[in-house]
Image (cartoon, rainbow, N blue to C red; front, side, top):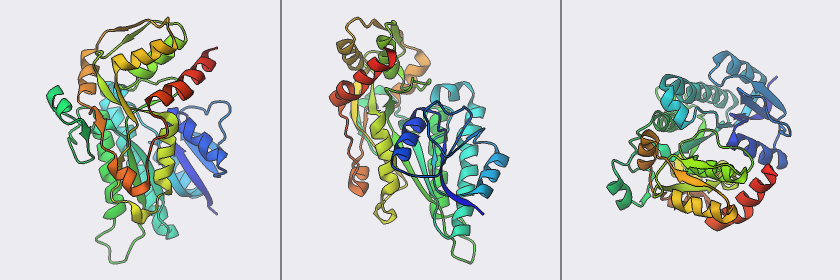
Length: 335
């Protein structure tokens, strides 16, 4: 007999560890985690499965054992790695997502209740053509500039579209009425965590300079000082995932939502770091390829739909993010 559970893929990553802790603290159980890596000490899943989310046999075994009410699909090959290995990125980011959507679709039909699939997308789905367009369109809405310039962005946009299809059209030619899954997605800005080290994302120049400064290491930033994108503290990212998951389906007007918090330049980020760590040595050595990617991302996002439909509002503005979350916790981490 299948057990009821919540599945978290990519649970050993930055978002996964924070989300798992929040779900465990809230008494949500059982929590089943899936990742290529072992879970770090202190993590509290009911069961951890170490393996690939792209392994169809592994997923089939989990589906036999559990009926999932929710799937938080966090597993991904991040942007910089995806550019280096685009075929692998498609396999991990798209093909594996399709396997999970098929699993959720089957369980929705069999159980007569929609399985909720929560997916973290990214501002990488946007592709502004040049810096002039970026300056002109200060806040980008969900339907604007959906022309990604990276494999990672293409993958994220593809999964958004697949999720919408499985939620709205899957099985439409069948005579009987089907129970479809409930796909919901957030387009995250650059995420900053005080408790886990950055893992190679293209927006990680901010977190990298902060973690380097806390360790007394010099840091050469791989983008120009004027480079500006939106960021968000990890606790707000977890709140956004849980807030979207808790929203009544009837209140949601779309399948993918922007969420924002604050926007700042690399130079302003460095200024915050140097205020907290006066000895920080930060220089600039722009990498042409990575710079071009970040230049195609918006200065900020228009998240009015999330605020209107399900009450999104960040708790951490720029100053609170640094003063109350990042600096104290990162100091403690490296002491």
